[in-house]
Length: 261
View 1 (cartoon, one colour):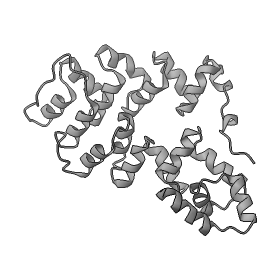
View 2 (tube, helix red, strand yellow):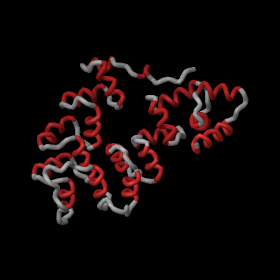
View 3 (cartoon, helix red, strand yellow):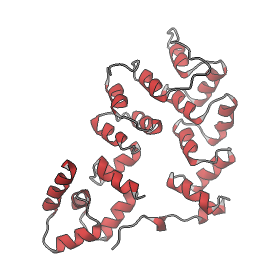
């Protein structure tokens, strides 16, 4: 058995049925957006699944996108407002009054607004996340700040996902450094894989479900999958090694050596 990307899982027909051409529909599928969802976002004027996902994470529906844009909100800015615990309609109202998320956050709590940004200054997701965590970007003072500071160059949307799930421990940091979204990281964990191991599959275009299916089809017991996969073997190679008497414990030793290499 060969271990290949799950191309057979992609079916452009449902997307074509709602008017999305095959070359575009694959991108919506890769972002795990169903045909009906993709159609709704496209009708709302969002032709790219990446910002559509940002809007969705910010709890903005396709029906609300026009109002957000009229107020001057972009998808990435909507995420910042969401992290400051503002509903879309609240963000729109404060934005139209000329407030930044930080100012609105302070005002709602009866505090003096922090320094206003210059109108030409870009929103800095990292700084805003640090402010949300309760600090100013200096020495971390709580777990959320430590997570943000230690996550390195992880994408802002990825960071938002972990913070939204309140998963900000050392394990979350390891996954975020590999730029693996929180929800997907949980699925890789269910397979018993570590961040770097999962990243090798992700680079090959494989999802957790595709990996699990390939190993199941090869007849490898679920409890052994992580050991063999972590050791760098394909399902076919693992099957051959097991037939020769190599055990999962031995594969785990090879896995440990690979981790320390």
